[in-house]
Amino acid sequence: MSTLMMKASTQLAGRALMSAIFITAGINKLGAGYAGTQGYMESMGLPGALLPLVILLEIGGGLAVLLGWKTRIAAFLLAGFSLLSALIFHANFADQMQSIMFMKNLAMAGGFLFLVAGETHAWSIDAKRNPTA
Image 1: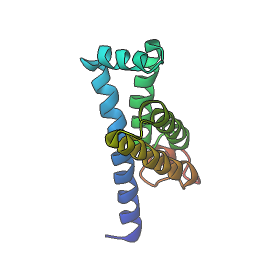
Image 2: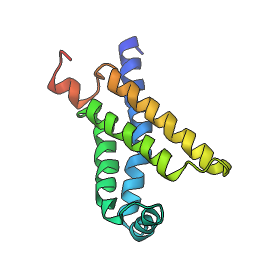
Image 3: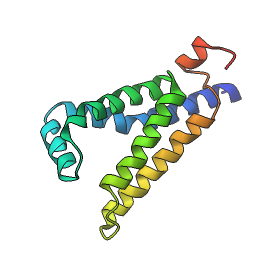
């Protein structure tokens, strides 16, 4: 496998792995998880009316990163979402699981920021639309 092919396939795999958690979480919230998630948001002091925007960001942003479409914008939004979610939902450091979830969100935000700062990936819609980027 050539170096360019390996780089492109690794970038695609990285985008797929980073986006998978958001796409599946958004889809799960559309079904039976909607009411439970809305109630959980409200119990944490957030309006449940924000849930459709959360779902849109999770599915839309996740798909955008996966496909490499407007990657920098989608990655920036998902990084911010990950940081906010960590601070709002996972800041109970007395609970080891919440501490782990907090750190997971920080790591995801860091990975998304690499996408924001990085190059356009060869196997992406961004590269097809603007080959000189």
